[in-house]
Image (cartoon, rainbow, N blue to C red; front, side, top):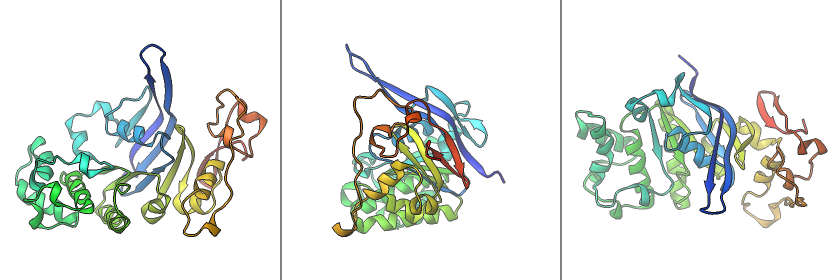
Length: 303
């Protein structure tokens, strides 16, 4: 069996805003990574880091300016309707992603109708059960469900076609703490069935709980990538260190140092973290090298 399900090669994406005075933002900058069969791979970073844009590119909701995306060795834009059957999505807020006028059975059944699948009721019930819900939910509408139940309906809809990859964009951020663990554990159970997941999140605790590997994004650039335990326990890139040191703590006494903005009006550096980095070097103004440290990618001149 092939080990690589999805691969991004030097993917870049920019957006231009403004009617008279146009401004261009590079949302994703030459990002490359792969996701294996049955793997949970996570992208982390603060808001605006490019995580969701990458998710949209994989879902073909956005097209990259440069670079390519391959699914089982084939460019995703060479694939037809079968791609949407193999790759599905779970979005941040189920209140917005679920049609309030539809019953649960209609919501979960919709992908089956699009792809002309027979025995739909049976498949809907199977998907709901995998998502942790029973037949008693079939006739309910989203307004009659809790936040966690709505997200489970969204997951049932995403898995009803038995996809190979789920793009989960902040799937627990709108949920109460009491529901988050159950939803994360559900991704682990789906992994046992061979379903891969791209977990897009800013929640490092969620990453630590379920992901195999993690890629750290800052202003569209992949600054560090490796096995979760290695990256979180021994972060190499100053931005990864910043993320971990500013993560919410259980008690103020656990709070670590804060990073300061060292910028003095410099032009954009090849390293997007340059203005915040206390360890920056003179050569960081000109170029940034990518190195491999025990199989871990680090984009930093300190190594």
